[in-house]
Length: 151
Image 1: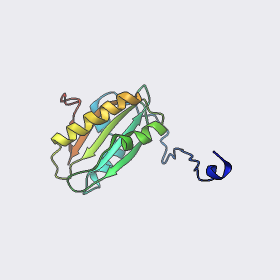
Image 2: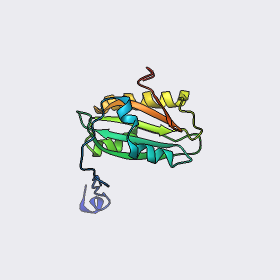
Image 3: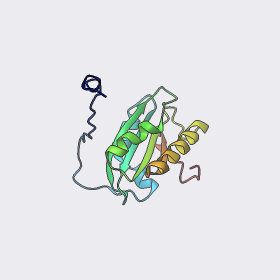
Image 4: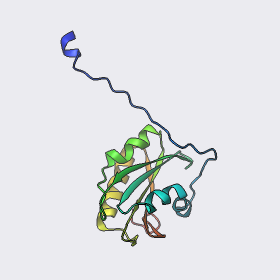
């Protein structure tokens, strides 16, 4: 490769930007802990469209950060494992918890919700990032796929 060819190669710098840092660590030890996070509930409750969120955790399940991965329509959000894990990798997460809302108010998972969860879980195994749960919120209620044995 000569010098002229090298001028067309772009250099990429990847970094993580943290917003609104908390002073007290939050440790997740159950699906109720995961479901009671006010900052997650606020993100989901304020939307009339499906929102998909990924919570990033340390190996001891302390919250590192979270990311809104996708904002969809009234009944669907497009999710790809690559997008789910991009922020988790940058945050150096050992585990994640997935969240999304059903604006209809019914938190029961669709067949597609279960399929997406299992696809993301398999991708996480390859990356060494454990998917601990996927919580679906509908109104004030939530559904834990792990608790119901669906993942």
